[in-house]
Image (spheres, rainbow, N blue to C red):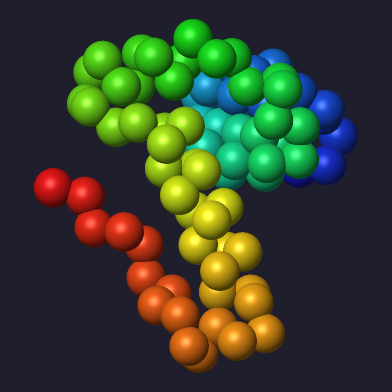
Length: 88
């Protein structure tokens, strides 16, 4: 429901995380939907925190997924490998 009434990923994540109950799942879903819809509303410092804590480069992963989507939605997609690049 948050993703249908809010226009900020950061605000929706913070609201959901502070509600209690199954807030982590609600925050993840609302943040994902609103972050995809309004990417500029994601707090860019959070990417650095995630990378420093677990080594995941979320920005790089997002770019790789966007390239994969473009490649796999191409009319000749069967001729291309529609698998993400393997990272060591």
